[in-house]
Figure 1 (cartoon, rainbow, N blue to C red):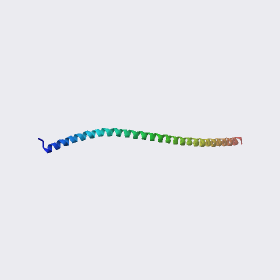
Figure 2: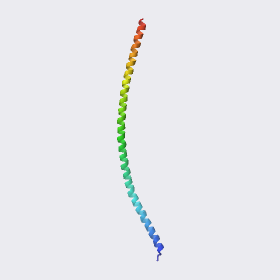
Figure 3: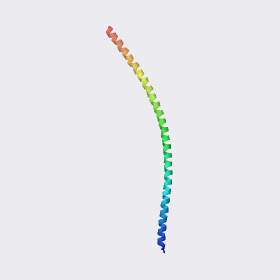
Figure 4: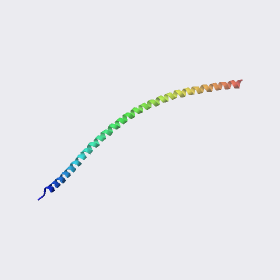
Length: 99
């Protein structure tokens, strides 16, 4: 015959075994849900980053376009100034050679 202490110990072992099995089952289900939520979160993050990248690309293209336009105007005025200086130099040279 078993004593009261022995039956308590066997019930404890059975309870620990069932708890371990239940915990493992719960962990497996929780891992699937966790992976799914992480996948959804990463997809949302990638979509957000793609949208922000497109906006940044559009902004930088506009800035680069304005910079190119500004530089072309400046280079044009520099070219005109250089050409005017060359003409003035040629006229001075002609005056000095002719005189």
